[in-house]
Length: 170
Image (cartoon, rainbow, N blue to C red):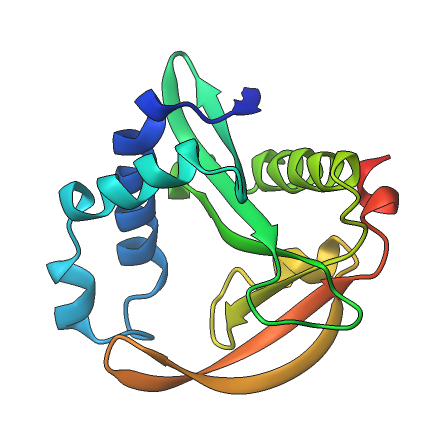
């Protein structure tokens, strides 16, 4: 598995992984209609803009020329005195999970954050996301819980944080 910075040509594959992973993971957590109305074609423009952005960093996990997962992040979307950076998205196709790919992606982002003097980060996750324990295994500290609007509903989310991304990157 090759972990590398994303390119503009990855936008379509990133959108596909995003939709597929949401449909595989969030069934029963997010309204059915919302999940199956998702379109990789509609999301592709956002990922294309992200790969061009100087404000966001993104990496893909590539296997045999195919994108199997990705991570994106940047400065925390809400000002925080402690956590400077934020993982915006981390998705790995179901058949490729539990192989260390997510960990490699987080480490790539943490390393990049350190190069840009971003030394702490957090991530927001749906509280009932069956994959949220992944962040605990990476020693993410449970920070708080809050309700956020998503898919036309208010859903419970939790935050995990890392006070020193340098420890993750080494």
